[in-house]
Length: 324
Image (tube, rainbow, N blue to C red; front, side, top):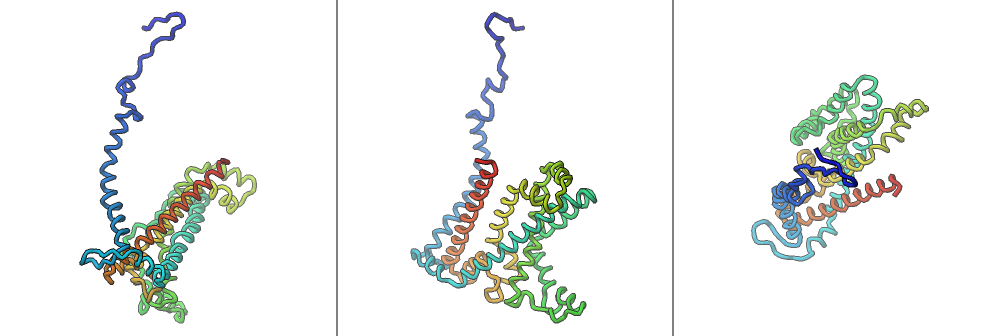
């Protein structure tokens, strides 16, 4: 037992882990963390950084994949700026943003709030969880399988949609949905809304778990209807998740490839072409590797700019909310 002396506190023995400098903020601990990051850095360099640098270099060359690349400077970029097909592909990307970001985010926000605030309370959490899984199911379907199903539904001759319209007396509305320039892009957009809607529903329902139920109860006692609670409580509290969903969905919309490749191959004509498929066609069909790399590099620049814009907008909103 330690003896007490006047004016001197008892000597407390430090824990063993402090004496051996094994705390996470010690130099030895940091060195250990870096060792775990080395495999990730190696994979990042080999899979992302090296191909990215090579792709940027190829955008300044004339290269058909056989002979060595020939440096041509900005010729590919000058041609790209005047390429009507390229600008059409980016116009179609805006349509993909509408179908994969704006509509799914708005619909998913309303569905998540209804599942959490209405169905979950009246019918129990099991039904809400089942409906959430149902909405998310298209997200886990392989693109090829989803394309086969959608192609069968939209087939012009004996497709399910045209047969259904004929059976209910609306045969005049039957159409070659994917083969007609005036409906091909709209059909792809409808498919992408169906595929994408489950993602925001799952994210928003997870975010709503941290909302205090007493807020809803207090608002309901004050006479607020469901829409007022949704606007004032739900949207305000889960705003960070809305930013995340919007950013990730926008990036996915800009680089969408699988549905276009499996359903329309960018056709008819250029009605559904997008930058990623245009780059692919230049790479592997036209064998214009340098020009395809230019399209891919331009798409990468756009994605980076969009990501920086969203991150700054989110930081600005957080500072405004905190009053700083």
